[in-house]
Length: 238
Image 1 (cartoon, one colour):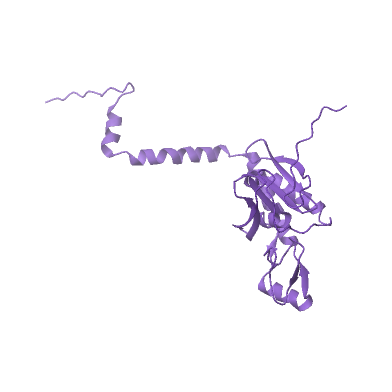
Image 2: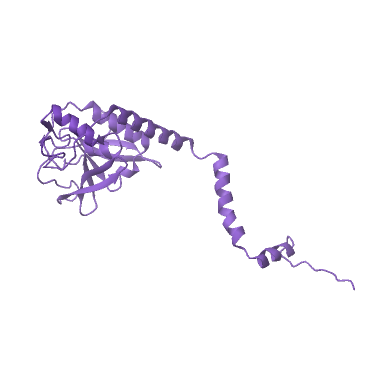
């Protein structure tokens, strides 16, 4: 009989079923625990857990999400519940280098629920269509399904989902390749750490302001002090 204790689970904010717990590498040290629901395509992050993910953990989550991309999805409910305090989650927005992304946050600061697609947008795996690309899609397709909630989007009259307000976006292979390369390079630099030359430059920069801030009188006084801190005497000859 195994003595391994399974980590406690929390209910999904959307479907209220048990989420899958996963421990990922933290950017400094240790691990970050996240919860995933593949039925609802969402991730629960406790307070600040999303920004504490190591670059390798971001890539690992991307691969996990991609391995379940063909799973059946449950639509986003009208009201999402915080799995920590049972309070209502509030739709919120933030900005990343790839544009605006959304998530549902706990008003008491317990954490946030991020749909898979919005996590990929936040971490620069997904980009929005340019006006030219959107026009080209409109000439070929009248309606698409929202990548976040699955609702239909009438491309003739809108460029975003009228239910969750997610813009029409797509998983661009070029953007994916660029994001994986970026996160891999950040992870490599993190593991190597600062070079001796970089540390030496940092120490030099710390000392320079102190030296420059000293007045001429103070600098002269330092030269007149011997190694014991006693003022040197001078003899004068007439």
